[in-house]
Length: 239
Ligand SMILES: Nc1ncnc2c1ncn2[C@@H]1O[C@H](COP(=O)(O)OP(=O)(O)OP(=O)(O)O)[C@@H](O)[C@H]1O
Ligand SMILES: [Mg+2]
Image (tube, rainbow, N blue to C red; front, top):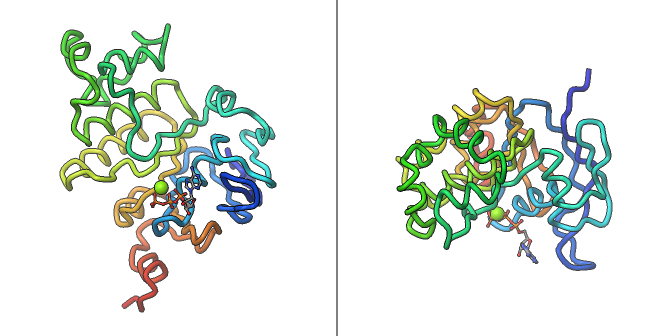
């Protein structure tokens, strides 16, 4: 039985012609799974994430989502079809309030989505006045990531690509973010592709993790195989 929601088949490409960043990436993501994407800086993790939402042009390869070929769909069409990415750094509209950031991505489903996400995302659980009065540029890193996550989830994606949701956060905020992701995973039937530098978090959270090395897929690891990943990534002998 093959219950893959997403099939990535030999994707090769890069940002400019003749300079490939991804070299024949293939992987399958099962419906409802959480898959970690790990790798050193510059190995191509974010580029792979962007390829999945068609924000990195690829020269060859195919992307099959729910049995349909979406290789040539625009980024907007892919987003509408249900694959959304939370970009590295937790991108939000800095000069808008929390309220307006949420309004912008939800339009006429705003009330409904606020209602749904309020119990899950602490930063949304506030009065209308405070949400309208708090500009996104005043948020701490952890709060900004919460807002970016809320904006990503508010469009009811089936697959979310989360690019380093814990980057730059204090240990307490990292723990808070992972509690939040755990809750989100339990309450929505989401498929999660998690790009992470925090190997121990990723390996605890994900069903499996793949290692990206210079734009190619390396080994796949099962949940909890921290030592094995570290040994492979840092080329040390595992004990
Ligand atoms: N917009 C861009 N235009 C051209 N090259 C880019 C662009 N973004 C990334 N690259 C290049 O693609 C390669 C892979 O970068 P990518 O951002 O995918 O790595 P990463 O694994 O996400 O790294 P990090 O852990 O630092 O976030 C790097 O050599 C980088 O310089
Ligand atoms: Mg990156």
